Image: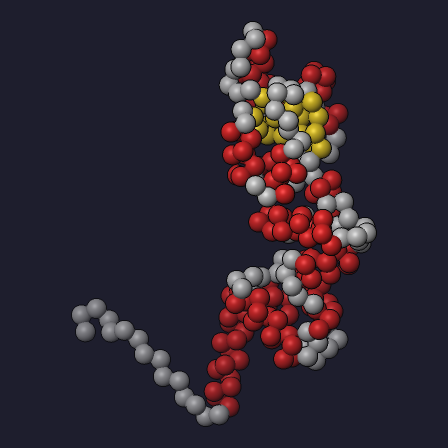
Length: 241
């Protein structure tokens, strides 16, 4: 189990409470691996999306059984609340439940939350590890972007100001099957705007594999055309020919 999963799951000790309220604005509990382990431990996670529907589900499948001293549908229920203010929940829930705060801001407090919320969920485990190993102080928006580029994507935009350096890094990302999130591609494009690369669609090249492929294909075509090389395209014969 990764340290990322352990950090989230440690908030739910077994046999401590039957009813939990988790403030989870970033939907961390809905990760399939987190859900799987929680279910193996006897927890059920139920998003609070409709108060009436949740009340019916809670009363009929869980609370009635617990009041009778039986396990019911599961050992423990976690109300997953995506909002910021828990006081919007019914008072009896707040009275009887054990509360837990889970958010990217809580788990990675040294990084700018608005930036890391734009990172794909599949990268959060690596980002959490990098945060714990390399984030020595609280970082603002720009420095968080620098941190992500360095420690998550292994790219330094300040060393990409020459065409050969830019294309080396861009192809390196492509060969690794990696694209930058738009928030980081925009940041790199802004840094390179006033360089010789300013005319390139840097943001699109770094955030879209298809845009990168189209640009390279067009450049290759122009290169061959300038040297008088004709490209003959062959097509498979039509059916019946």
